[in-house]
Length: 309
View: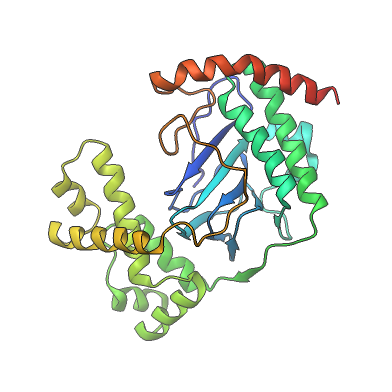
């Protein structure tokens, strides 16, 4: 099922920066998507392939392709943009397609990453629709050129249909059955399913289930639900179980730290808005709006200069 991204009227796309908790459910949409990892690492399932993405990975995601984040490092950050079919057809016809064959994930060098990051940052703060649409087309073209100029393809592996089916069940059903029931549903023994899931996703089935529950809890709790009701609705058997799982997840990330994970120097800047906030064409917090307005003139001039080069 295609997801409606609810793009602002009159805009050819959207730009965001994600920190930490990126999308953790499989989704598709009619817009072409591009991701640029600038910090940390992540494991993605893209269609029937599994990718390990490190800093500098530029990945194109197509409308007919399910994509799902299954694991990430504590400091994972990426730039994210989507483009409407019309702007893709006008700008880079080679990217028109539902699910074209071949690999569409490559590693870029530090210079290309910094240049693209500056473009993403310009568009994230722009407010003039004329500037935004011109910039989206320019970003799309520059990102595609950077992709073509790189010959370092990101390695990928096939994902077993049983792993995809179980991941989907755990992601969509808060009360999905235990290991035995899941194994029966895909025709495997519990032991083999457990080993296969860990081998192909890089994390245990139990950890993946808990990640999904914690994500649902956050969404429900942020939406106004009490901690108790959010925990139960998210799939935890009790509030005590939720507390144990959350404490364990926090402890693991604290022990891991962020210094051990690679990143490109000089790429990521401090954000003005909350984690995952949509900025382009969306309402932003009052404390950020003034800063965004002050920068829009500079953004417009810089984009105009770049188009004239």
